[in-house]
Amino acid sequence: MKIAIIGAGAIGSLLGALLKREGFDCILIGRKNHVDAIRKNGLSISGSDEFNINIDAFCNPLHAKDSDIFIITTKAYDTRNAIHEIIPFIDDNVTVMSLQNGAGNIEEISKLVNKKQILGAITSMGAFVEAPGRIQFRGKGTTIIGSAFDNKKKAVEIIDIFNKAQIKTQFSDDIYRDIWSKVIINSGINTIASILDNENGVLLDKNLMEIVREVTNEGKNILQKEGVEIPEDIFDTTVEIIRNTSKNINSMLSDLRKGKRTEIDFISGKVVALGDKLGIPAPYNKTLLNMIKYKENEC
Image (tube, rainbow, N blue to C red; front, side):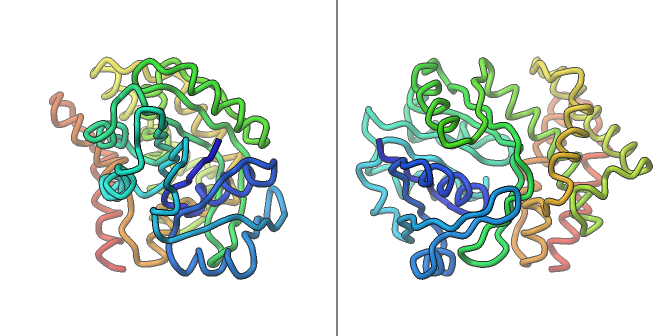
């Protein structure tokens, strides 16, 4: 089985390295400077695990042809382009899995790919690109995979592969619920840590923790009104993830530091949009949305 990771940044490269280390046929499709460094010196992982591995890496998606599984790890705003680039290689036997931040990725993929072939996934692992070809693994966590339609067999097959690669992975019977839960968690972690330009652990301060509580409760209340069963303990889960990734520079902050666009529109922006649709104010998420937008413009 050939696995192609499309948009191999921090998490995509980490997954690829862990899969390759256990002997799985896996290739990375990424940006030129990252790919060049990997091809020259191998892919280096440091932090929670430390190793260097030789893995096939390319810029051109054509090299992903004949893959059985496409794992999309691009930024949410690049999902459409990523699918357009690989759609010529997707036949009825191919599985496409979204392992991305934010809401709306599965819906975007389903515009071109049969829903029966789509899986959704989230992860609480923490990682960031230290330099081209070098990934800092800053927090072990759990990955959750579920079907967008009714393809539990394929989801379980990939879960087995991930667990064999020491990527702790579980099955979800409601991946949309879990994706939205991750959106709420990210709205409470990524945004505030990014505004403070600090590691996730800064949020363990008791004063900041109260803001995290209000943000996650706001998101939970809006989603529950929409009929999405967000767990009542979403705030406790958020705190646990902050502790597990306390040394991590989250992806939103990493993007800001590089002067790049963030995924805020697909995180707090999605919560605000849903609140507007339901007639429910989302002042915490709207404030964070506008503050991150300001920082984007400042960069």
